[in-house]
Amino acid sequence: MHDKNNPIHLASARQTPRNAGRPSNMLKIALITNHPPPFRIPVYECIARMPDMALQVIFCSPREPNREWELPPLQFDHVFLRERFVARGDNFIHNNVDVIPALNRFAPDVVVTTGFNPTYLYAFFYGLGKGIPHVPMTDGTDVSEQGLSRWHRMVRRMVYSRSPAFIAASMGGQRLYESYGISPERCFQSCLCIDNELYARITESGEKKFDLVFCGRIVPDKNPIFALKVAQEVARRLGRKISILYVGSGRQEADVQTEAALLPDLVDVSFSGHAAQHELPALYASARIFLFPTLRDVWGVVANEACAAGLPVIVSPHAGVAGELVIDNQNGFVCQLDVPMWAERVELLLTQPAVYRRFAERSRELASRYTFQHAAAGIVDACRYAVEATHPGKLAPRDQRKAG
Image (tube, rainbow, N blue to C red; front, side, top):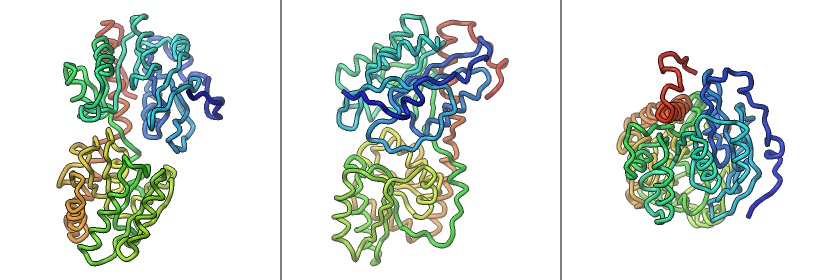
């Protein structure tokens, strides 16, 4: 059991609601989630700026131990619960009973939860007891949840059967909901996204320094050694040394360094370590191709970053972005984890400038569709649908509302 004092928690446990003094007929949304990831913070800020919305985000924790995010000030109403969780490998099971008094203080019109930890179930039952509609929100997909136990599926069926609307981060998430018999009209999308404009503003000067870039936690699930083997095979095919940049840190970093030391004539490997959010655009811009050989990722925001920076992406089919943000033979390739196959695709992109330019332009185009505004609209639309379905006539007609 984890329960510790945290400076972020102590400083932010009780925020003065930004919604104080707003009209009482606005929609009050309580959203309960693990912790504040950088790519979701701007989405919450978009909702908070909407004149007919009152959003409070209730966080179970300021930051889970396996994250190194540097967070900006949170410009929306939020609460950090007393940190309490059990670690199961890289997963953290939150158990915050104080979510109930937090919800009581805010008195929401709709409750959104982002998982099935005890904290989320407390919030779900709170809403059920009060007659407040509940909206599940997931980054998961029909693929990522294939291995769930019978117990986990039973809990989901119980929650889903009592929820009028649903939020998914991707089409894979919608397929997941549909597998439980939920109709598409009750499903809304809140995409995972990044600041595309920040990446677009990066000015490239001279040649790119690296052929390849790998960005993410350097842990077995992200498959960093596979990326090194691909670089090695490409070097053999092209008859020259291939350069690869690793951005990130993790327990497998020493293993990658050891493997790289055995290939001094084939691969030039650089390690940037953990990078702050503002450093990432320039790091992506310094490379030609992004390798994403993950063994499991419900989405993969690193692909958003690479695409926004104009990089072709080669991704395994085990990432949610495969087939949605990264489309095979358009802005990259979706490939099984076969080293020769990946090396062949890398060789094509490094030796065919016209193909490379076409893929790079398509990456920027596809990334531009994933915005904070679209993600915020998906959450709001789902919440409005849930309230209108549960309490008809409670909300003003859509055409009488102003856009945020």
